[in-house]
Amino acid sequence: MLMLAAGMAAAETTLPLLAIAPVEGDSPRSTPFARLVRTHLGNIAGSAGIFEMVNVDVLDRQIEKFGCSDEQCQIRFARDAGISFILRGQVKDRGDHLELFLYAYGIQVPHFGKMINSYRVKIPVSHVRQGEKEYSYMAEEHAGFFLSTFLGGCKTPVAVEKKDTQYRFDYPLEINGEYPLYSFKNGDTDITTGIPSLYEKVGHVMVSGNMVSESRPFSQRHENTPVIPGDFILISYSDTSSYLEDFYRGRKREIVLANPSADDTCMVMAFSVPASATMPVVVPLLGYYQDGDYAGLGLWAMNTIPYLYMEYHGLRNSPEKMREDRHDISRQQLARNYFGWYMLLAGGLPQFVDAFSHDYLNRASKFEGEQPLMGNTATALYLSLVSGGGGHFYRGYRGWGYLYYHAQNLLLYGILYNWARPEYYNNDTKEYEKGQRNTARAYTFASVLGVVKIIEIVHVLMVDDNIRNGKVEEEMYTLHPVIMTEPDGELRGGAAITLRY
Image (spheres, rainbow, N blue to C red):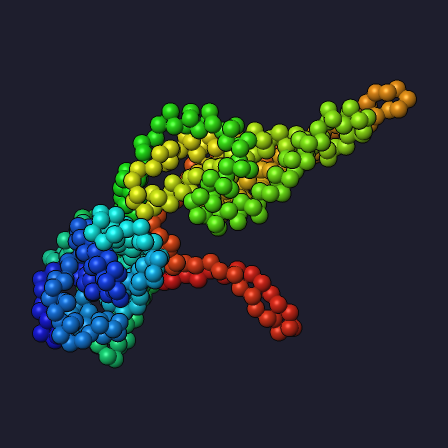
């Protein structure tokens, strides 16, 4: 291993070295998937043109020969070999799904052996047989997104050199722009490796074509020596990170979503009213239940049944029927009747969209062929215009869909309630007399609804279709609830965000 490390360190390259350790599987089903993930990691990272790749065959032989399979051993090996970054992972078979874990470690400045990024995702594979192209598609997708997040957080030091009277960065890729300039602190080294472990910012430099064109030293630097050979900058790969993310999102859209068509949007428009009217029967039976989406069925029952009751009560006790019985018609009864007609003609559309688009997007996430009617921004815009949360349900975001759904329904009911004019039956004249509208309140509710609708439309245009494969458990940050006991003995609740850096 020492001979291999010395050979790697002596290799003539100024690009950072990237090693991909074996991705291990724990079953006959997970092992082939693990090999596919590793292969795609190597292919994608190698094609990026920003790393020098360590030969995987040589690396595997040495790791197997010396039993260096644990994390700390591989990090020590990478440090001795002059490797800048090392990726490793494992795939665990959980029965109905595979659980993929990927980790990235930075060995040199500024990471010093720390984990840069971790990626954990649950991948449903019960419907896919080994050897099918979908198996490889899923492995490539996760490898691409993991590398995208890894590149978004890693940095590489590039030292400045002096040639003649010019200061330049000897790096095969072109460097341009303004960068902070760093220098190692004297005497601060890692006792195990002898590598400087602390550094400080000493100024800024403008770089053009790898040449220092301008420098602005801090106070601790003399103006006559603003740059000293050995100073370094930290370059990042944010552009490549964004490119990879956009590339794999766009590539998957081409595979699983049809080209946007005005005919598809017109078809959705034509079936909007029938879909809304039949929602109470079609959605739970032919939608959620038939597709086995019991979580969706539970959410539908919890969020929709109260509105269906209002629809039934409002349409059953219509103003015409109450006039026949010579009953007073309250503002609430009128509002429920109006709201019932809205639910019948348009209010049930979001749930209809959710039931069927969820199934289509789920198939798309698993690369199960091209899905009809999906991926059309015009359709998402139309559904957001005519229904609360319809566009977000169409895009695959149930949480946002139900948020806008409830917001629009409550605000719309507020408008109808305050705009309605109650009717009172006069026994003397045998005629109805109408009360007053709450016009100011109705306009207030309408204004708020208009603002919410604008926010909803802008939001649905900004988000992409949710066709990501699997369920990502952890990325760069997680948001979770917190409950703690204060010194006074009372409980306090809130939310916390955990950021990996």
